[in-house]
Every structure is written in C-alpha cells, then in structure tokens.
Length: 269
Image 1 (tube, rainbow, N blue to C red):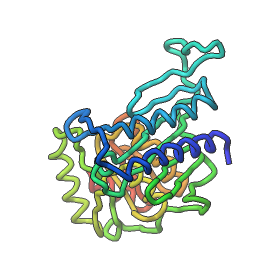
Image 2: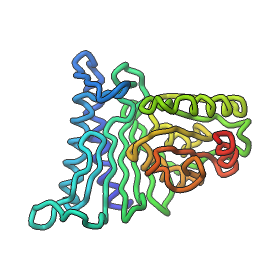
Image 3: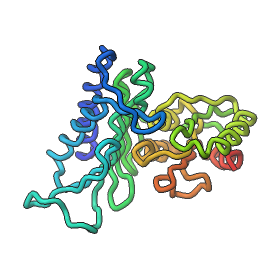
C-alpha cells in the first residue's frame, strides 16, 4: 500500500473515532448554520483538525483544502508558508464529516472523505464510514477496495434496471426546477432512486456495486474527489453533465457503470 494512502487511512480513522465518540451523546452538539440547510458542529471542526494534524506531521509541505478550514498552504523547509502563486504539487482534499445533517439527527449515513491530488490529478482516496466501520480506498492504477476486498461496479447495462443515487441541490435552490426535471426523467426510466444525504458515501456505494449510478448538482471538490477516483478504479465512468472531466470545477457530477453512463447523461439532459 502506498505510504500516502496509509496516512490518509490513519487520518480518516482518527477523525472517525472523534465522530463516534460524539455520536454517543448528540445532546452536547453545538450546531451552527453556515447557510440555509448547511450546518457545522464542533465535531466537524475537531475531525478536520485531527486530519490536518496527521497530514502536517507526515507532509508539512503539502497544500490542504478542507471544508471547514478552506485552503491551507504547505510549509517550506524553513517553516514558512509557500510562495504565492506557486504551482501546487500535492493537495489534500478533506471533508471531515460528509452528511453533517444526518449526523445531527442520528441518521446513520455519514463519512469521512480524504483525497490526495498530485499535479491536478486525484491519486489516492479514502472514504470511511465510522458507524459501520467500513473503509473504502483507492489508488490510481491500483484498484478500489472495501476493507481488504477488491470492489467493482455492477454489470448493469440498462438504466431501466439501475438503482440510482442522488442528492438534492439544497445549496443552490435556484436550480431546483432543473433538478426536479432531471429527477422526473430518472424516476421514469430507472428501477429506483435513492437520496441518503452523504454524496461521498453514495459514490463509494456505486464503486462497491450497491448502486448502479449517481448524480448531483452543486457539490464541492471534497464531496466528490475520493469517490470519483474509487468509481473509476472500480471500472465505472465519472463526468460532469456533459460527460467531460470538469466535475470538480463545475460541482455537477454523474457516475455510473460503463453501459449506463451515457443513458444517465441522456436522461439528465
């Protein structure tokens, strides 16, 4: 296993232990709304701080992009931040608790998501479900795994037979009309649609063959980076709503088995 993936796993498990301890008594949660329907707790912040601490100890010169902390530059050998405008070699992309609203309500669908980007390409990804103790991992060119078992996307070839995951665009209410049109088409042309509330975990489920496809609008890079790599390493396809590779920039993502991907895009259009 690649040493950088090992660091990501160590960090994800540390964050997961913080989340699990907090889950024992949710009455102590301090909840703040970042915006409408978008919440943060002290658990999100503590989990992210733990992840950053482990990464900084191992790779102090690497940049970090965290949901709660924003963009953090790596430090040079002299301990100073890197120069402005420098070309980013390595960047960690962190969501310390994807599915915060689920966590607040005790709905057991949330996870830690960590990805490592090298020169713009996602090279390693970890998604850890602390409640179920399930660890999804992937490294570019080395496959995707659930714990120690190799995972693959399903052999589903028709959208009409597919179980499709999705997420409501709660941060972009102006796009609800578009989303509802998409939802209507997918519901009419698939076996079923599921909305569980943690996009990173939904993507891991596509990689593991628990769903055949997924789409969502208005996501952030930390929602998608690790899961997108897992699906690709598990034999699936990932793109924006045009099928191109710009999903990390646009925030709109579609993913599916190879045969279902084009059919999903057609329905979404």
